[in-house]
Length: 331
Image 1: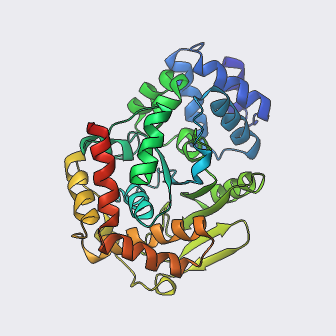
Image 2: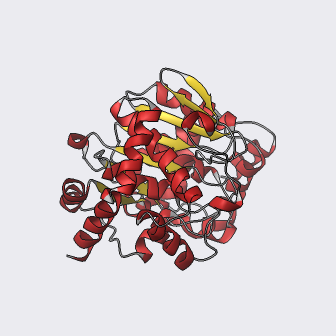
């Protein structure tokens, strides 16, 4: 590890095989916390390369507990996080609106590291059970249209890194890896990123798969459609920039989509929005992201996807999806 760190400090990069090997060794507990922290810190000081990202991704997928949900043609909705915008749980709420619209969802998520409240924090607070039992997950999808894949249950090798990430409390390259290593390998995905270079890296990786995808980068730095400005969306077929007005919404302020300061506050916002009692800004930003997910999965226009998302929220089908999942969790 010391040789690798010295190499990186000398402004050199890792090959795909080197990156894969080092992450496998980290996962097996071969290095102490100080060395791992030093390794992570290097990637906070420069952008990750394509080969490094490919190597890290291959390592995590090789080590993960795979789950076969391929019969359901699901979609995952998540962002890298690390945009330092402190929004409420937009992608998690969008997952339920998407499932309420009839699109099956495999929501991959984790506890917050660089934010107050990650998807797993808020869902756990609201009574959702986490499991890696395939029959339980199939039941969740069949009855509620969604299942939650809590990352630590599927990536046990990361137990050596998790405490260090929590202590650092900063975004690391694991933020970037999260959306790439859903253990169910969904056929469809929307992912938000915090800078344009990362959007290009994701696009290159996704082009080598058969996945339907949409990559989101809000030009003012959000890793989701924020409606606070224009958003670049990259899919397999095209790239477009959408203003809020293009999507049928007014431009929002950053404050209007800010999140809670505690997990409890975040959970309250979550349920208010899901019950169609959120503010217009909260509802609209979630509808916009859900609309893109529905559009990506069904191959329809984003504007049509937005109309279906509105119907899912207003008719309370999204809330029904959540309540059903919660009931299954308690059974």
